[in-house]
Image 1: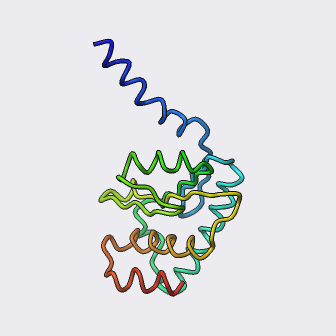
Image 2: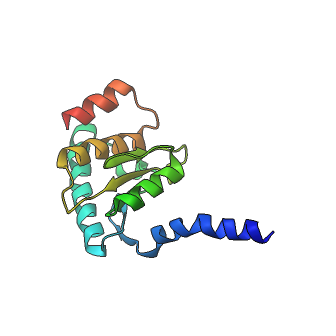
Length: 151
């Protein structure tokens, strides 16, 4: 019994650091979680809102039809980013991944930021995928990938 308790504690220690310093910012359409600072979360929220307006100039979805605020999680440590992804999916990525669930409240765009250099093209691309999936649960692939490239 003691061994099971010790093993359980050892398995949870790596995940405790993920929730230790998480800063949150909310905008009209986004909930941003950042391991860097409240300011970085707010700055990313403003960028995502500007992309939202860009996407909505083309698609013109009604804001009230958005079921929940879209989640964006920003990591500044590659190790924390990989650990978080490995809890959810059996692989890691280099910098961006959109994780989709049946429950829209759980869906999130997960980013790894290295030295303040988020690729605008990748952020817009993945931001659009999140945007479209938030309004249309399973959009046609040609629409999803085609417009993600367009933006």
